[in-house]
Amino acid sequence: HVQLVESGGGSAQTGGSLTLSCVASRYPISGFCMTWFRQRPGTQREMVASIYTGTEAKFYSGAVKGRFTVSGDPARRILTLNMNNLGPDDSATYYCAAKGPLEAWMPPSQCKEGSDYTNWGQGTQVTVS
Image (cartoon, rainbow, N blue to C red; front, side, top):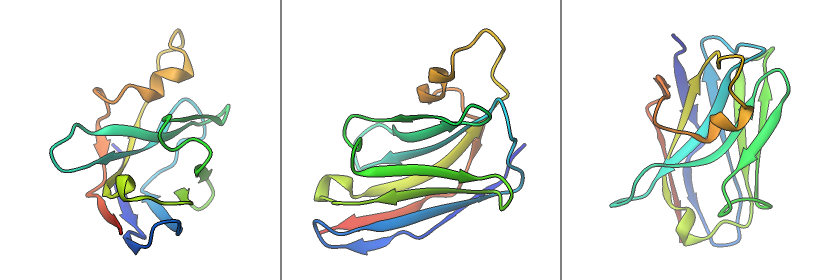
């Protein structure tokens, strides 16, 4: 089990930036998906950005690619999401999540699948106006 605590949410103006952080009770150095999701009111939760630890393969949703950057620091057990050029559609509750280890036959892109994550943070609110 991995405990996750997010921070860094808040308000930003359109075009602005925010950085979210997620501190993990443990940060497996290989085989795990460390991922940011978000959920806007009335919509389903969606994957935003993910790292597959070990290979450090990264995955982004089309909505944030080129604007958001995900990074991990295993030594400090922190997953970071740098968000630039924010717009109102980025307003949501952002969640940090982890799952793994993936089965050996699974591709790292399995990190994008959100239905089987078993470790979730409490969420942090981002509001862009």
